[in-house]
Image 1 (cartoon, rainbow, N blue to C red):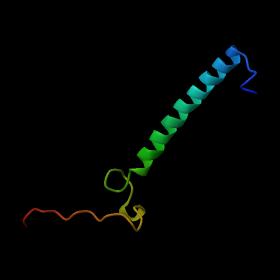
Image 2: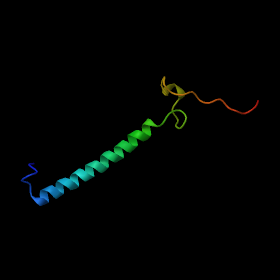
Image 3: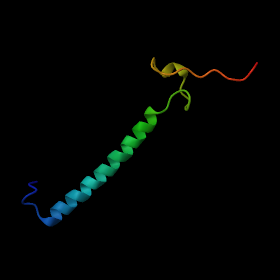
Image 4: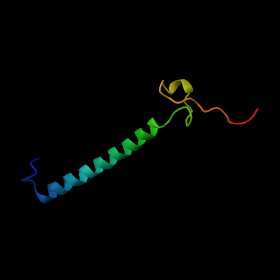
Amino acid sequence: MNLETASREDLLSLIAALQAENAALRERIQALEARLATDSHNSSKPPSSDGPGAKPHPKSQRMP
């Protein structure tokens, strides 16, 4: 579609479609970022799945 020669209605429908796509992509990004934030500390994943760069669990500060 040539934007310079498109009708007003065509441009408005294009804007609506792009806004809907943008909203869907934002939701997908949020879901993927939430998945990235999970590790063995805050999910049911085993510690071995954390990867080599993961910080170790802190030791308990309680006295024995």
